[in-house]
Image 1 (cartoon, rainbow, N blue to C red):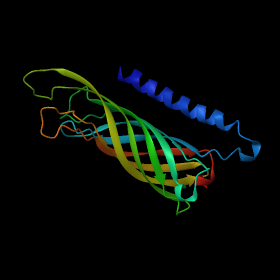
Image 2 (image 1 turned 30 degrees about the vertical axis):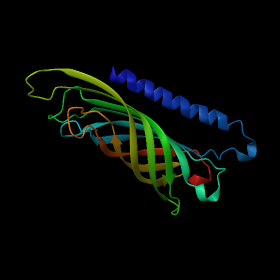
Image 3 (image 1 turned 135 degrees about the vertical axis):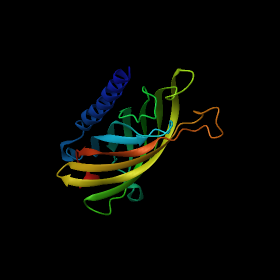
Image 4 (image 1 turned 90 degrees about the vertical axis):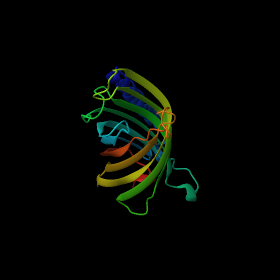
Length: 206
């Protein structure tokens, strides 16, 4: 089930990338090659905030930085992201623990340095999780939950060569009203992702 969900997220993400690329081909020849779009993938290691331990998985990104913006807004863009965390569960976690997310929002990339671009971002999206009773529980049970989530994060992009950039990314997620029986019901998964981006062009990427 989780593989099918992640495949749907992946296909949707790639179709969105393709749509942006095809749209860019309709612009005059004088501006072709300046598509300010980046597409990438990475490997994530997170604290899922369900008991203790870690959870691993993959991530996909798409960043779009519009070229025709006022000078004081240069560096602002839109990010879409999908992530599937379902691997490498710690022994202290349920055997079916999984957290999938798909989200989008605003990203700001600081372009003061030519080959190093720090950035910050704020995203909103949809989170989907499977879980069960913790190891050693008296009564065994299974659960499934979905939430509208918010994400704050940041990181750095480092140019490797030509259009290839490396990315180190951190996110702090907020899943509201998850632990209803606790004083603090919010679940806060957080973690790091490392990966690579392909930047198609645009003044932002030079």
